[in-house]
Image 1 (cartoon, rainbow over the protein chains, first blue to last red):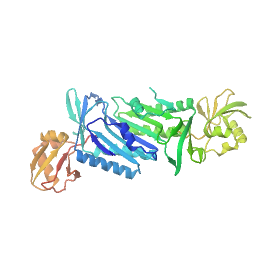
Image 2: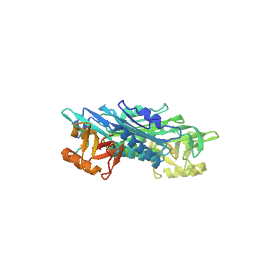
Image 3: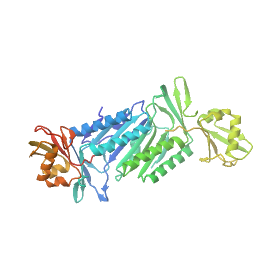
Length: 138
Length: 138
Length: 79
Length: 79
């Protein structure tokens, strides 16, 4: 079961739902981070994600383990895309399940917030007239 | 576009995702309420949902409109199943999208919390040895 | 005053039918509630009993018309 | 002390390559950071620059070994 997963192929929300579903889980919450067509009003052509994979997998696993433990989840999956990602496609999908929906909401938000702080993945935005590593400069 | 929808057919999470996705939305949050195989340790065979449909649709629309307005969402959909629903299948799916993920999380949780308080839909749990209208008694 | 009330969920089980005519003294929802509880004491045992008129929730002081679509709303449990 | 550092994201652009050997005085991550900023002043302009050793984040007082897998972690932006 691919609890944490990094792939150059398109991510599947249905696969994530299937991975966290079981007959005892009433509340399933999923976050999908899609690639937006603009940033601060400037048109984005596509994104390119680079990962330090062994460490990214390790940090994603830490997040899933911490969330499962802290919110008594049944399951959590974190799938991240790398390489070139077109506008509108999924950069990240996080899904989790638990008997209680409040736990699922809090855990899912914790996971995406923490991923954006700790997981060594970098995205470059490509515009008509150039490219930029997101968040690199103050 | 079926923003609010009540159906005896199985709900589709992919359809809900497609309905709220657009190239300008970075953060998509979805809640799926599945039918659990037990309640307070007692085995559930299946659920049966009954709706006062015209009013349920109206109350669901109110929730979606309020959430969209309050959290500046791009889109929100609320789909609810009625009739007999087997264990593990979806009773309700709520999905919403916005440029900011925090807004999507808060709006989605608001929507399911409010649905459970105001929308005139009732579920009956069927056990091996009887049946009960959920939450009817104090 | 006489109104037709429609019932869902456990309220339908208590009435033992989907719709019934209720004749009662007074004009408000509170008056109707009192009459219903008198005829069907099981209503008093519910966690709550709300009323909708023409697909909107109404308070106990709402004044009914005989052609209103009155619906009994026992505790909801969707989701 | 001499270590091989691997770079990702904008750090790779600053080094102009994926890996480089850095020779520096001292033994800690702080000493390595100082040397890197001296050789490549662009590192000082990043919002942050963290270090990972053998796939774990380390602090500035971490003492390096020459065979450690040292990775430069500029501000992450996954998700």
